[in-house]
Image 1 (tube, rainbow, N blue to C red):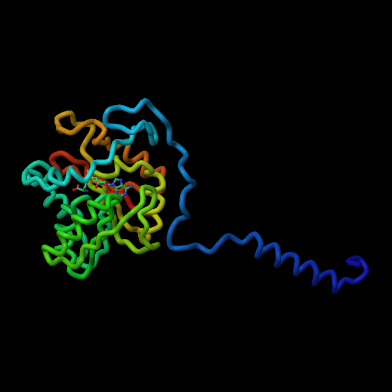
Image 2: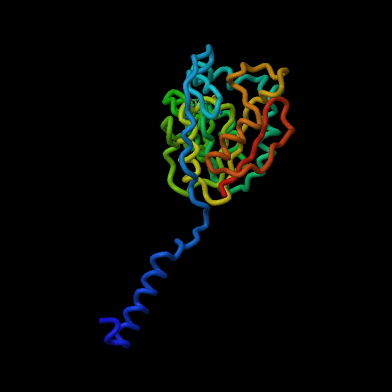
Length: 250
Ligand SMILES: C[S@@+](CC[C@H](N)C(=O)[O-])C[C@H]1O[C@@H](n2cnc3c(N)ncnc32)[C@H](O)[C@@H]1O
């Protein structure tokens, strides 16, 4: 047929070439890089006193701090010990920013940050209903309207795609028992170029008086966040006890 009818064969050849072009054409470029392949790096270890016997990229995950620890989170010496005011100033948030405080606990950071966001808000995420009840009571007592308590799951922040400018995790990430899934859900919830501010007690410094499972090294944090598709931006060395690591969604 193709040999016998030159016009028809040209039409057939042209259609074939067009079909091949559209079939092999790369997907249109979107604003954000594609999500990385899932990280399958969980393991098991004999549970230590402060750990759960599950590891992520070689680090044993710690127990969750229960709600009876609210008193410790709200202690008056905290400003002197950890300089949270300085940490908050270092975030440099815009007044209309939408920030998720993940593992917000009693909302120690959430309420202090919300004051700086008159046109924005803090979504205070936690997995313990008792923490959320405390947050709600505190918001009512203080008359604060822009702290929104939000129940997350252990493996999902349960926030809408591209709904956040930034996320903060203070002394919380090392407790996540599904860190890869949490970071994947957070990656979806952040806008492109959205930032994660990770505050963890410095494991490199033995003078920081915190148990080893509740500390992290910069190297370990970078390993985990980079494997989950975040770009390392910087580590601000200004705080007395903690790293302030900044990561960005590409
Ligand atoms: C040590 S407290 C820190 C609270 C607060 N960020 C602060 O520094 O005052 C850690 C909090 O993380 C919460 N948490 C643990 N795993 C979580 C998860 N997967 N998602 C959200 N919150 C989580 C715990 O319930 C707890 O309230």
